Length: 42
Image (cartoon, rainbow, N blue to C red; front, side):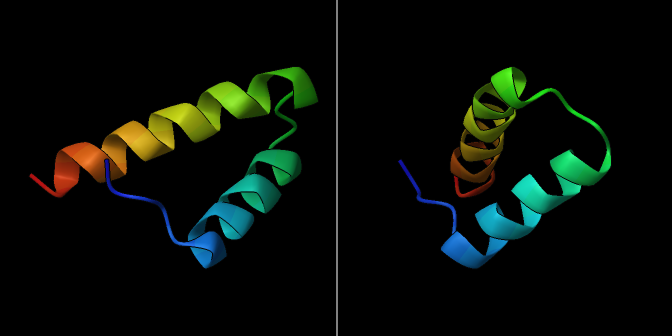
């Protein structure tokens, strides 16, 4: 699986906070971002 660059993940989490995504759902958003990066690399 391709790893998401730390810089991208940090920016993504900040965006989620700005959009008001509940903290208990952030891990699921991160999971889907990792899936997206993995799928895009193929």
